[in-house]
Length: 467
Image (cartoon, rainbow, N blue to C red; front, side, top):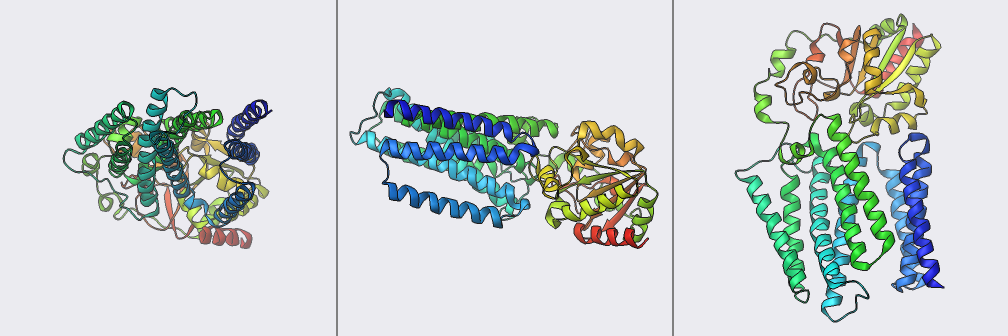
């Protein structure tokens, strides 16, 4: 009976994983997709534990309860601005779990344990691959977490011969995998492989600047899936192979989408930087801003909006930090009540991960049809009376379009600078993740509305109501 029920349960779990990923492609179906994926994982987990006789029934229930409690606490406590750090940590835990499981199976085999019908070559190659990719994922993800959290320098960290050192460590790891395949009984080689891979993960991520961390997190997500798939071959577990492959493929696709949104190649992200040399040739912030910054107030912005027929709101990381999405919704409702056309311009990499702005605005029940992607909304800026930029920086920086020597040259941006009036809501003139000044702040049609995004929007809503 188990020979029929277990494969059937794995098939159901795999279908749920695929349906879950499909659901995650749109905000309207994302919650349902998440639930489908979680249900599939629950089925796969319970069936595997019962099939392998890993734990008693009581321990399975206890493990599910503890995991559900931790998940509920994280879901309730983690802010949206901290979600990329949490994803990085999850990637790391997934990577090290795959490495340790593969290592445990290798130890069992070295001690005379059975691996069933799995060919020894497949078993050892898969174990070595899991150890390598899993540990690179773990330490790389911890560095990414530290950079996103501000615990590790977000700047570019370089040293002489950095690429050569990384290549040597990668070759050493491959050599250790060969040694494991040739002599599976010498388990010490596996632990050395894990140590070398852990160092390689640090070396691979530490040089990359904070601006590229969202891309790195997406790539590490793919790595965690590949490590899981490799462990699936170690265990001869079909559903783990399928789930790992889905995660690996979707992570790579997401990585390439983000690279395209920044007009950069994956190789440039991994082995290059938004270079300091290019930045050094650009005018400094003082040269761009001095004597040209014009400030405004809530009352002045309210008067401009009173006569505006078209308003485009550009949400950015500053909106997420201030948790201003609900106040922005209130502003939007006031403007629409006065007959103003309101749109939200969404850049693919605004915030710290793809879909960041979509999720924040959906949280405030802002209609999906008002969220307009970059390619569609850009032509509308030329007819826009007022563009309100809330905490965005690099994604509206015109040097990406106008200066071929800038570090972000060629990166697709939102053409907010082409609106008749641009209101920038920002705490200060500090640069974005790319670390360069933004000439839009000093443009003739720009007004700086300094302050916290939520407080400024509250003041603006009050000013509109009083006018």
